[in-house]
Image 1: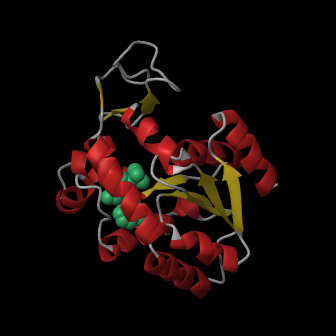
Image 2: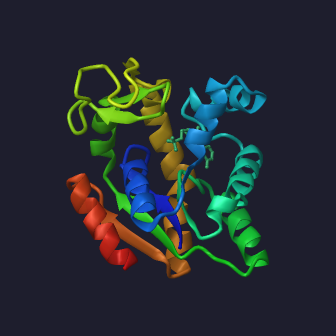
Length: 213
Ligand code: AMP
């Protein structure tokens, strides 16, 4: 099963993507995570991506499409995957569709986690991330057991640069301009499933499980 997660930054699509990946035994593929891993490892790709990410801008399609296609070509993606944060533009979606068509494959579902803008800014400024192991928390909704400390590896939690308020505003603008058109794109293909993302994350997951069934 090949699934795409859509939704504004901070809509909770990453959390849902991880839950879906676990339920269906398929990899969770996040382009944001791949970029962050590259930044952490000091690669050339990481340095290039960081310039855009820190401003809330999209990393250019050329760079992003290549890393995504390389990733889904790996063995563990043979039975499917859940894409989190890709595609973010119509051209990215088209390149993915063309690559899949060549292999007689297609995306099965595009799941849109719907959350209004006013909820997003509040949510994101409460987000805390572990830069060491990648775990994410929220000061209200998913608090770590010990304040400021990662449950998984014990490192200090931080507010990521791209979760800061002005960056969030930029990311929302970019989302509306460049990513939201994908909702129409997948609707026209007949594979869009929208769920209310404002409810408890277990309820969001329940709604998603129902539409994927
Ligand atoms: P995320 O963790 O998915 O919110 O991604 C964090 C940042 O990585 C985004 O704000 C973009 O700068 C960059 N990024 C992640 N995925 C993509 C993509 N598909 N296209 C362009 N930029 C991306």
